[in-house]
Image 1 (cartoon, rainbow, N blue to C red):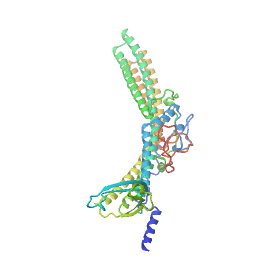
Image 2 (spheres, rainbow, N blue to C red):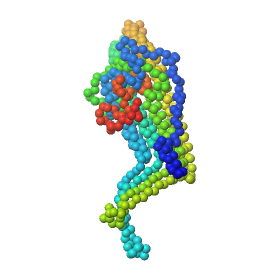
Image 3 (spheres, rainbow, N blue to C red):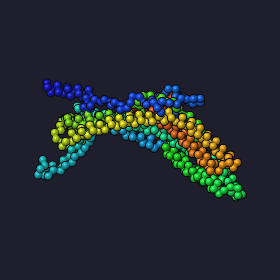
Image 4 (cartoon, one colour):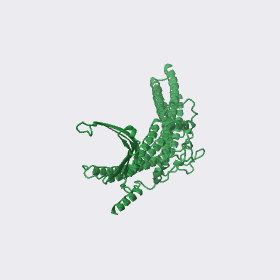
Length: 505
């Protein structure tokens, strides 16, 4: 009776799916409960006339086609989501992780296979029976094996593989969001170089005209060589800057092509200039706790933590017995023709219990390693939260200052332009030296470059803040978010991946 009671307890343990995994507790977020709101954070942009508003929608609910209005940029993002090789690798990593999970899950079920064999053997005559030195044995049958997972070792390995699969899916989601932001940032950089080239070209034309007039005055004896050489320095500096910026602009476009994954198509729609991008500037930041469900990199880190937690269960179960059942059923005959005759049936059944006694400390070391790896994943999870908090806080600090900085630079540029006009007028009337014109022209050129750079940095900050808040996963506002392992529905650019309800979001 005791034997049957023990079997009943074992079956009950197996049926309830008992494992030795530690109870999982989500680590507390190691950041403040709110984002900073004083100082540079106090003044956040408010959409004015002609500006678009997020209308209080969080970033995850704003499609990238709604965040970006430039049709050329939208087309580049669409192409990149189909062709970017890094994104393809992340999709293939999902497939590999799913296969690993299926392998681990398959170990929970019995293995069944069919076999057929022939054994031919020669025995020395003095050892043979009735002088038969050659013997044949034919067999056909089914073989079955099953490890009964009483202590949850296999289930823990299955849970670990599932968590790793979900982590890979979240990593792919993070890669796609980052790709959208990277394409936009690089596109803004190209536009900034376009504006810098225009400013440099205009500066060069103005400098060449001043040099022509100064040289004419020098040739006629009404101007000095000092004025001539001063005018020449502006021409040469602008010429050198033009070549440098043309080179950097070409390299920026090459970087954009790499992100897109193919040469830029010739039928691209027309784009907007840098100053007309009109991105959404008032996306609400929400609370730091929102990042736990909006940032795929944080969810990836937590899935890695869950995988490490499950691995502890497998390491603990290794200290307990393994129970395996093996058996076979088929026919056995000394002749091929007799395999299926009456009386040829054969079967075997072999239950096995393996209890670890001495492993040289291997099981203890494996458990210690599993606990250390969990602590590592806890630290990685906390770091992911801290990094996300810092990225959002940095974006908010920048968003609260760029508008006033650009307004000041615009006023400075206007003042420098007026200063140049007045200095040139005074020089032509003989009131001032050419040095004043040269200084004013150089200052205007610097102010124009600073203004363009600030405009670009403001736009890239808005893009990066949109990404930091979890935006960029859906195409249009109101779209149902795809599961993290689902492909982009733009055509067959990558192998299809089956969506999993477990990875939604």
